[in-house]
Image: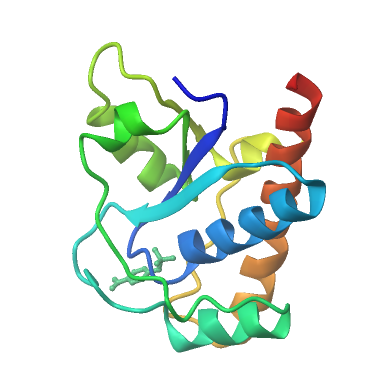
Length: 157
Ligand code: 4NP
């Protein structure tokens, strides 16, 4: 088994929050010089094969990241053995991941903000039905989560 930590971020549609978490974590790991395997997926199937929501692409671009090539996919059973961490963006995604977690699976299932001291069990709010302002707060949350997650990994290496 490789020592490279592997992380799958999971939200509902895989077009707003989890692609942003993936991008934020990828960038933070790169800045820290830590090699990681990162992907994102959704628990729902409405947007399979779609690019991230234009509002998510815009906020990523504002922060210097291009996520236009990402494509939505659904969580699979194989993900539970492929990834060390499956990280849910909110409590619904967290419960879904737990319900389908096979006995003895490799992946640890947590919520993103569990990795930010003092924000354990807090969800990253779904920005899909709100205005563009919601995406700035999504970006702040996923950046905080990515930084906390990375800090934990660096501390363990
Ligand atoms: P996400 O946002 O879970 O952050 O990607 C959503 C995207 C699409 C839908 C809901 C949430 N939808 O109902 O289609």
